[in-house]
Image 1 (cartoon, rainbow, N blue to C red):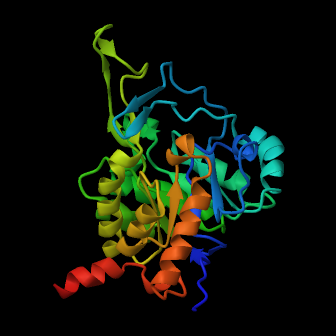
Image 2: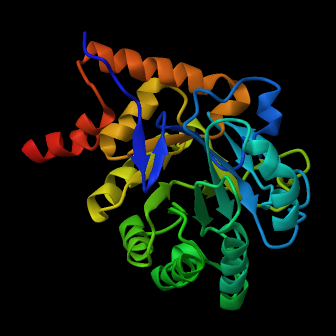
Length: 310
């Protein structure tokens, strides 16, 4: 029987498995270490880090939806200094690759965070979250405009030699335009998707359920949208893609690989199954063995090639 390997290279980051913890739900890894080990994860993408601490949005900040959840956390985080002094030293002991999601309200803030992390011991890469509102552009999210995307990614690229992932927002008309701008600015890989914009209304109180009115929708409900955008981005760029959005099983993860992703990230799924990485890993190995697949490169984007033949 053929021996299957789950090892992949994501934009210069060697991963033992193609399964990562997406930024946000897995926090900084410490919380989950009390529940499960991290040996099934290829990498941990930590919760977004800004130059100074962010307090986040007013509560309520979470709400369940059909097959998903809305969150309006507001990227609350302790800031760069505390992460470097308290969180990173613990993360180094866990095993998976460490990728830091960085956030900012101006181009200079993004660049400063990247500069502060560029020489930190034990970091394997950065993920630039361009869904943040740009205060210098009247609150327009960086990731909804290709020129702003290029500007912020270029600024971060100048500050670091670490592998650079750029996390794209799905709240755009054409994801391929944004993906190309990120690639041209120096991204080594693309992460997508971030959450979809949504809201809920409390019919008894007759007001928005979330304190910030709008929030980000994640979970299984968004998977078909995420899969479509991974497919589109894979056709538009020549750098690897980290696919995410509602992954809850090995079958889900394999669909992303077949659509063109090099690796996958799990987020909301960890809330209801902390052991999901192990489940997905086992399912992927079983699938590869059953289909005589030695490595995932053999099926990366294969569904697109099949569609071309029709």
